[in-house]
Image 1 (spheres, rainbow, N blue to C red):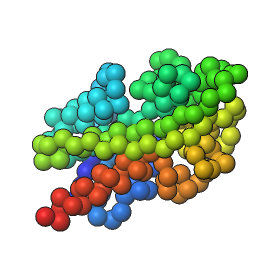
Image 2 (spheres, rainbow, N blue to C red):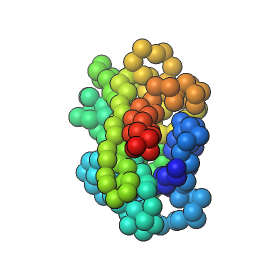
Image 3 (tube, rainbow, N blue to C red):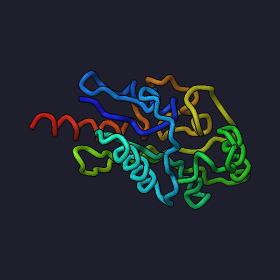
Image 4 (cartoon, one colour):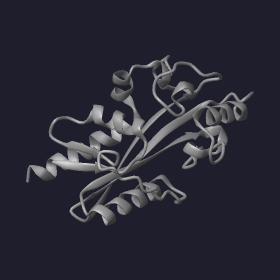
Length: 194
């Protein structure tokens, strides 16, 4: 079976490809030479995932999925949340976002946070949602160079390494995205077995 992953983020595509077994072929927008800007104007992760999936499904008429992920920090009223990718402003990068979070967290004792991923799958015209979360804490400084986004400042509960210090395999064992992906894959495989 083939599924289109509605993302222009190569890091996410590579991460998801590493999680997928042989039963499903993930096709990226780059594979299709599809360069259109994906809509992402919702105030929720669910809304953004739906917008992106519907956009691709309407254009290409093929089964597809999209995801949106946010870092939700207790002490910042669950910010950056849906604005995680552009928290420091349009045109800023992950380092700018991390710098802003660390600055806002200075002197704050409560470091609790979570990564949350919502996947929207459109298959045969029907829409389904899958969610994955991983709880942890925000560090006071960057640690590690692996992964992307906020990975160098997030330590999952029960661990002592940031996502940025883990190998891709270690991260994929426990990450929010892998939890949501596993739920989606189980669903897709169960539909195919019928």
